Length: 532
Image 1 (tube, one colour):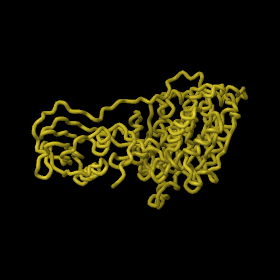
Image 2 (cartoon, rainbow, N blue to C red):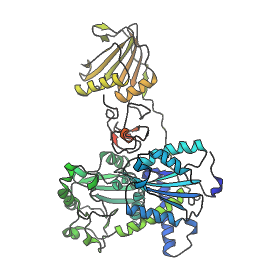
Image 3 (tube, rainbow, N blue to C red):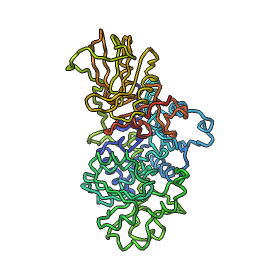
Image 4 (spheres, rainbow, N blue to C red):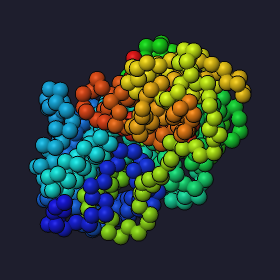
């Protein structure tokens, strides 16, 4: 691929995409924070800022704000202007997006306008930057041009990684840049608030993390992010309200508030907005219960009707949000400097690595005893064919029938066969059995599909009434490239109604659920398949 040698820039971070905070390794994040500290110090002392600036005519930046956001947009605009590079503000309201043109075509066109482009994108559609990173990467390779970089400026209720970067930098400032430990309370709309979702990974910059989650049940942190925090070794506690939190003695020195995201709530939740706001809004009478040195943070702006941090706190020592907001300019300027090739030559830490584990989820069983089995279709034993056994074992009867019908439909098993739900002789649990006499073969593609439709089943190949091969079909580590699957989040870029042609792709979690590659929505394995 042609790499535009005339850029005269360091390429360690060029072409990178920051869709979520985890797209930067902890060492890369720490590098960003140390550079931000130096830039901020240089600005305050009026030192030479040239070492931080890109100042290269071959680099262009696009601000594409399909979703309005004055604060984030202006912060990024000023951060881009700091570098004195070509800046384009994409007017989404009168652009191709309003004419229902897709993202891929639009960004392919824009990418040809500069030798190297950085895109800062904010949308209501979730997973856009992840999809564009993949699709434009292929485009750049075909065209022999430098792959562009993408920054997620906030996508729906998914994540907002650059807000997380400025938040973590602010927490480090509060901690005198010590990373040993942090105790933080997350307060407010933890369900819809993307800035708190990013903290499941962003707080890994600290070594010992304790998180108190304060929200009523309707606004609680989604379980996927709670599981991620626990997997990282964070200590978690949950409280339904600030009042309940202050009723116990151990409170955090750092409180991070989010506003009630009323525009993202359904009518059933909106009807309880007053009660929900009361549970997560700070009141004057609680001031004396806070230990000295406590700081409040907020991504801003606050909701005028339901401010979780009331304005009377603005002029108190609790106010950490004003300095926090200022940090957005510095951290974003450094991030752009990294992706633009100006910063990074002196990075010596561990980069982000994608570890690809080979998982054998189709297991051939070699230690079974082959003997004549009474697998039947109707009253006739199966002499030659395939029998899929233990479908949905241990689940309720209706769920097992769903497995069987989906397996038949998705695998195209419209042939002479029989199926049913039976009790296992050994443990008396219900299981499904699908008998397919005279079926000559069951290829690897069908086995992969079977693993995602009816995981933990067994597949028996029968010849002359004897089982000659047996396979145990386990949960697959990822599911993709099947026409019959889709993310069920209507705001995901891969959802069929979006017509963006983003290939559905899912990763398995430790809990045997599946996470969408783009929007991180968690699905039960049964739900990723399109209904019959």
